[in-house]
Length: 155
Ligand SMILES: [Zn+2]
Image 1: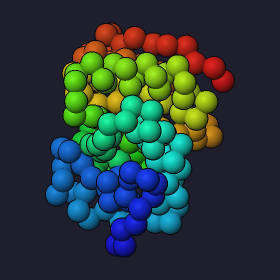
Image 2: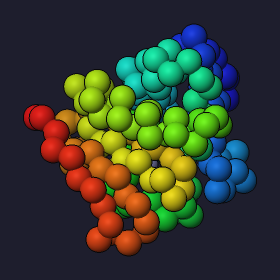
Image 3: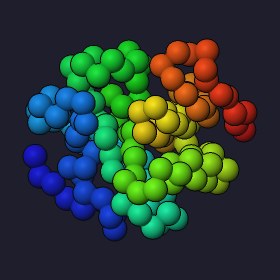
Image 4: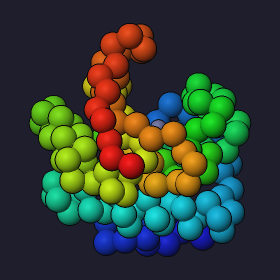
């Protein structure tokens, strides 16, 4: 498929990846609908985060087709399959992930429907606003759901 630049710092191919199953990401074939949604999350979430923190943002998991979503153990209703969510990280000082989460929580929930920081995986999951989607803002300290911290969000 044809690659192209979405925003100042992101290309489409950066959202067609899987840190855990790169071999399955190679056969991803997003539709126009998916590419539009990738553009929306890039323009409204990831490029502004990139601009604000001034460090490279690396997408570890972006758009998933059902096979890739199953392989990575994603939720059956995952917004990754809608191309509206990505998991991202930065390679820098470890505390930058905390700062990134706090900045997104405090400044960007007007455009984010799901914000989840997984410190043990060094990943932040964020989804753009999707009508009818479950909204959340959480830190998941471990795989054990009892160790979630929830933050109230507006709307
Ligand atoms: Zn995710």
